[in-house]
Image 1 (cartoon, rainbow, N blue to C red):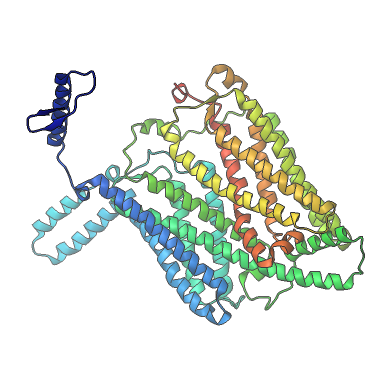
Image 2 (cartoon, rainbow, N blue to C red; image 1 turned 90 degrees about the vertical axis):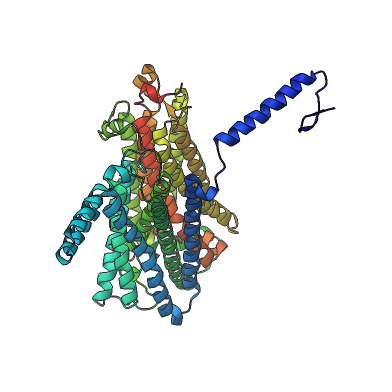
Length: 604
């Protein structure tokens, strides 16, 4: 051990000259001194990037607090007594006005200040003209006007060259779901103001009017500004987009719980009809299968039943009947898309400007290559036709009391056939696409779109898994086994397998390409992708049809109890429908991009 000047003890390594160790110590100290001199320390609060990170964190925390508050508020509706409903509606109006009103105000800010700054500049000029008429110092006013006109431009506030926050098919679906939601809100307002329903007041009507404005403005924003990146007013943009995420999630939670309440009502009617049917029928030891099919047939007729528990014109659901479930589902799916898109917009706030605007402009040209897809298309159309035929046969049989059991068998066997054939299609696609190339250097332009697809796909998968596993567990607890119970259990099992295969296929297919001329000529797997695209459209329709019979599995309802099953199925049924819709969107993107890849998009 030796001692250097003013440096304390210096330890020499074994077998290493002392001079060399001293030289290394001097070099390290010199480098540290240079770093300290060149980069003076800065408080984090003075660092723009640090402040931006803090604002992003707090905006996310704000959204989390609002979502949790909305969950507690909506759950209080389920637990509230009839006497407390009026006070709850006042709270709904206040909270709904804050959520929808805040969202609309942010959209107005985006359109008037960020996207179209000429609107705000026109307002400033109008204000200045009024001041000029009232002011004696016109020179100072003119100087202020010229300063305001020269400050800010469209290019300095936003750009539309960032990765898209949703493909065309997803945005079209958002428009369709949004239009159906607007129809529901408008019908509710009309029915309330004309006296056709009694379970409403001015609070609910006002909230529905706010919802119409919010849904329409957000629908236009998503469809028109999916590639927008906000460069100015970043903190305001982050808080605004997170507020929109919270507003959409609140709408989702609100209508899931409304559907749960309606499902409990259906199950109560189902119980009344079942008790009546049981009292009129004779008991037999060999009637377990017939009893189950009779229960299922009664449950399937609940949707078309006009039996009210209270007043027939008490609410909108009593008037719309089964159509209300379709509208609820559309509102839930619209809110899900809106929340996911706004989250992607929030992530893109403040990102550097893209240098490929010309390339993005050329991407607006739609090119469709339909080669190597004819067989898959017609197989898919056959699949879709059989789905429509089975639905028609079901309605034909369910209206005939003597053949209601046949209707249930048609429904169960159709479900089994659809999922089994879809499983074969997924295996076919995976086998055919095994020769494609994995994209290692992923394209920066696809990051946001892929993130959005993955978020929506995972949410749909969670709903499918809960629905299928809950059905399997419920049916496994059945004490009286018969062929129908076994078939229902098999349907849930095959459905679970199909969801797993298809999800894996979609995640893999998003990252593989045909990077050689031979692969682009052969297009391996495109027939299977085409078939699965159409098949998921058919399953989307079938699941929408199935969602109108939430209590169709009587054994499952008995296992979980009416309240638990109502909450379970209504929380998941919209997600299962959305999974099929978004899967068709993802297959359309794979069909469009996997087999038409430019050389600069492949891996190195």
